[in-house]
Image (tube, rainbow, N blue to C red):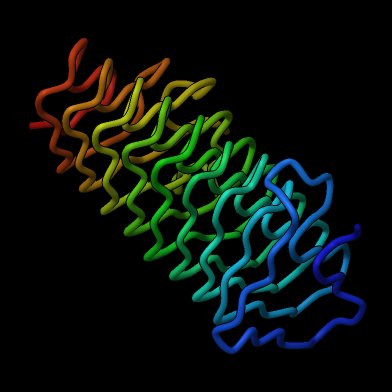
Length: 231
């Protein structure tokens, strides 16, 4: 048993054309699609299911994952790490352990996507400078969105998470950890998000985050903790 598909060249498009790449089980120690080090690769228009990571992308530049659905990964639906100038757009991730998992990227942005019914996270991001916009991360066992060490692009432009929804999660809708007070290296700006009916927190930040136009209601412990601009 091996990966479903290994990328071997830069500048290509993998158009699944509505087809499915399927592993034997979600506990397989292989990836559905694996790209290590190739740039300007587009993966689009299909479904990946039953692998350790549905799509595993690392050390890439300018690569895109668009109009792809991932189901039943043992670890991440999409793991995107140590890369820059990437796009994750119009994807769906369901029934995985770690949802959309991002690690130390620069300008790998997630837009217009859904990551629901996962075991830990809808979307997790560690140490990246990114933008997340119009993402729904709901009905996950623990967290909708979990940002750890969110990196600012510049001293005046923090990591931005906006127009997104984190409802009905087992712990928190939005959770920002290891951020530091405004105008320093690690900071997030939460704008226009919705967090309702989570088991503990709607929007939570370890230190005061930046925020405005957020809405939270019906969360068991706190609707907004150290996130300003909440109603």
